[in-house]
Image (cartoon, rainbow, N blue to C red; front, side, top):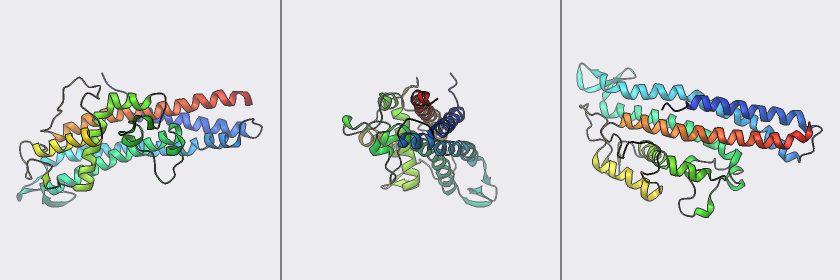
Length: 278
């Protein structure tokens, strides 16, 4: 089935949050709630703007993914070991890293921004009110990896997310951390099988695949049963660009559900509390 687009869910969340802020402003002057309650609901207007800003990155991400896909077809005819990238002739593996970093950084900018808003809305106070550290999708919404009694969001949402989306979230996060923190190689292990353009220019090397898989299982405490996809694992080790599309679809679904649930929950809460002030 075609999953709901993240952009549509972000738009709905944006409108919910703006409606909450507007309602709080209308009721505060003669209201009966504690001042801090109205202040929290009014702050939803600020969170709505952050949701809208995240939505605007979706087209940027698509442009970056298109760049990744088209890169192997951009060979420099004067130097077949190079590709043309941003008006320059550079080695393929340089351009591949730059294009992938652009894509994965933008993807996780979206996820981090949306998770931050959801966390401010529905996480426990130690997370929601911590101005020094924004709520994070892997850390705060998949449940504490070491202590199940330290879950940071209620209504069993952490369990729903981890059991159904933990693996694609974890694997996407592992790829993000490799590309942005380590580049082409981590601890002497090359990410890709080839540095040159080849029939499979985005094939992940066996040792790198094992390293990513192990990090997800041992450090992030996720496993390949934690997904809603029917395909058995592994998915496209030989074609990272296809793997990224699958991970994007799954993490988009998880993040879209999370932010829309958070916004609708707070809207329902505000409606119930503010009805007495009408």
